[in-house]
Length: 350
Image 1 (tube, rainbow, N blue to C red):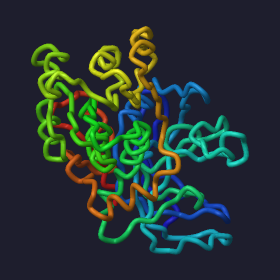
Image 2: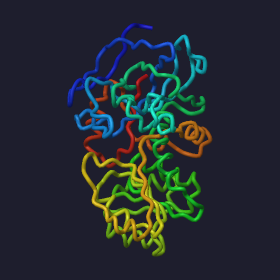
Image 3: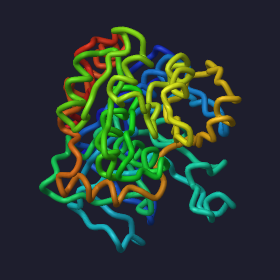
Image 4: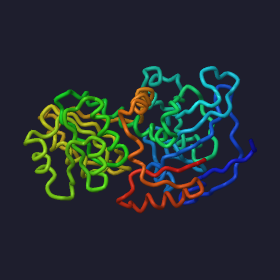
């Protein structure tokens, strides 16, 4: 193994370098991982543009190697590592918590005020040939799951955690607002949790058709007429009993409450990027609605990996475009253009 590796670095806002840098050293409780595949997320674009701010922990800082959705293979282990071996196929949680604060001890380590975030906040990410990781946030996946499929375990875990907050019942008609990768994964998760019917709402016909392929019983194109009228049509005037809001669009959030039955449940997962949605709190009270937020993916990774291994969710269908590591800047530019055919971009590091 050489001493240098190829890596993508954000040196500053709009300043991307594809460099030869030193392979990182690992501690006794860490492993060295050969990265195979990395998914590009809207967060990566926000970091590149200098717009990524964490409310609790501050702003992402430069320089940083991006990449928090990844899969790879362990190639070396620290002296104290006993639960992983060279050759293990692994993915890693984005959040690396302190493990000692009150929130960590409660199991809510996604809210750890001292946490760092792989590829986002104070830890270099996976857009490099190698990455080091502590083993307490690593998870194995089996050899019959490809590295490409596994690179989307992170967004699948985010979708699973948010959908699980809705406490879905067999008679529920669940809506998913937004047909991006998280939304399309939430459609599948609603089915996993046993929803009777699932409706996907978006303005992109390509994404709506993929949603149908992945299990949506109905799709609504919000650009083709009044949203509430279309909702009444697919629900026989009953509206939705639960919804995952995965757009981060203020107008979509404001409209979501109107589509829920009394006693309905809403989980917000999309961030508005500093913009503020205005919701009718009287409607929340008068209809006894449940309103949830969901950040990250604590405590669900092993379950989600099992779902992927058992063929109960499909991540491969979300992948629409592939780039090499040296083309990362082109991939970001393509994402920023919002091509309607684009759902998920994967970077092949190998």
